[in-house]
Amino acid sequence: MRFVVAALALPLLTGLSACGELQQNAQEAQEGIQQAQDRLDAGSACVQAINIANFMPNFADPQQAQADAQAKVQELQRLADQTADQTLKQNLLDVQKSVEQVASGSVTLESSAEWASAQLEKYGQITTTCSKAVGG
Image 1 (cartoon, rainbow, N blue to C red):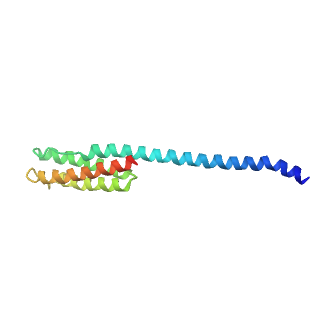
Image 2 (cartoon, helix red, strand yellow; image 1 turned 60 degrees about the vertical axis):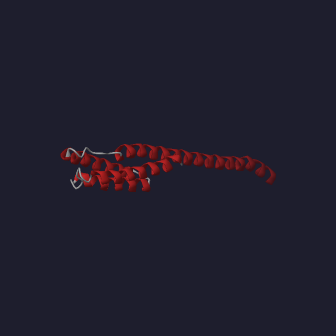
């Protein structure tokens, strides 16, 4: 009788073992999909960040420069709020603070070269962060 019970239980135990392996494989596949999605999300955020961070206003028209900067400040804030990567988020907030200087009118045509140089460094930080985030 014990032999019969053991013989009947063996396929059940084998099936449970196989089910466990399938469950583990499914979990690993899900993790792989999530990592790919995270890279895709980082890639999407990076494309947007690079496009927004390359902002360079026309300082010869101060009113337009301020208006353009105000729009970029809002875009940068929205993207920073949606960005999961903390380094990229901080880079975006740094660019936002810089662009806020233009929006407030504190950057003039005379001081624009210094601002543009600092802005270029911030842009470089974003591209470096993105190359690391998307590159894996």
